[in-house]
Image (cartoon, rainbow, N blue to C red; front, side, top):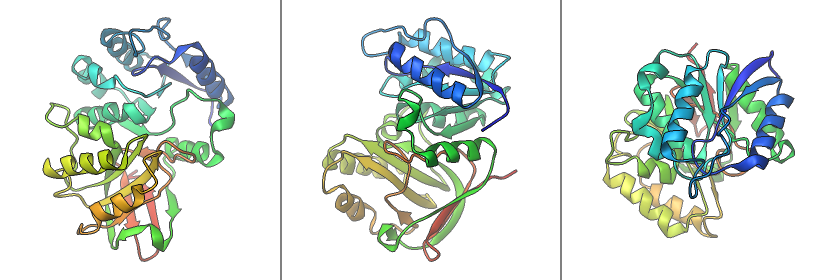
Length: 288
C-alpha cells in the first residue's frame, strides 16, 4: 500500500454511527494509516452527523491538523451543502492535504477545489466493510494517491457521441451538481470534462435534472462527458441518457466504473483526462 501516514476521518453529511466508524478505522489500519478524528464524530442531529456547525468545525479541524496528510469521509447521504459558508477557505488554500470521498461529498470536492485549488479526489467513502470493496476500487485509489496515471477501456456500445478530447476533469453526483446551482458554490464546467453518476433516482428525475443543468448553461462549453454508474435508477435509464446526450457535439461515454457501485474508480479533480472513442479508452494523466 503506502508508507505509514496519518489520515483524518470526518463525517460531513449523514449520521454515520459507531459501526461505520469502526469499519473506517479497520480499513485505514489495513491500509497502513494512523488515524485521527474528533471525539464528537458520531454525533447525531436529525438525519445528520451533528448540526452544520459541528460538521463545518470538523472539516476545518481536519485541514488545520498538523499530523495528517489525508482526509477521508465516512459517509455521504446529505448535509454537506450546509457546511459550505462556514469553511475556512484561506486555511485550506495553505495546506497540501487531500480530501477523499463521493456522493454527497461531491459538493465539498467541487467547492474546495474551485475556491482553493486543494487536492480533491472523488473516491470511496469508508462506511462499509473492506470485503465489500472491489480490488480495482482500492488499487485505483492508491494509484491516484501516488499520482500514477491509469487507463480504462470501454466498448463500442458505451459510446453515445464519438470523438477524442483532452481536458481537466470535475464532476460527481448529479443531484449535488444540481444543488450547487444559483449559489456562491456553483460548479464550474467551462472547458472541463465532466463525470456524472447517481443512485436511487427515477429515470424522469435524472432526465429533468440533466435538463436543469442544460438550461443553467452547464453543458454549453464542456469538452467531454463520462457517465458513471446510475444505480437503481430504473430499467430504462440508459435509454434516457442516450436520448439526452445524443446530439451533443463533444464525446460522451457511459457505463463507466465511477459511483455507487463496485468498482468505483477514483477521479482526481483538475487533473488531465483524455477520452478517445476510436481507441476505446479514457485515461487520467497527472500534470506533474
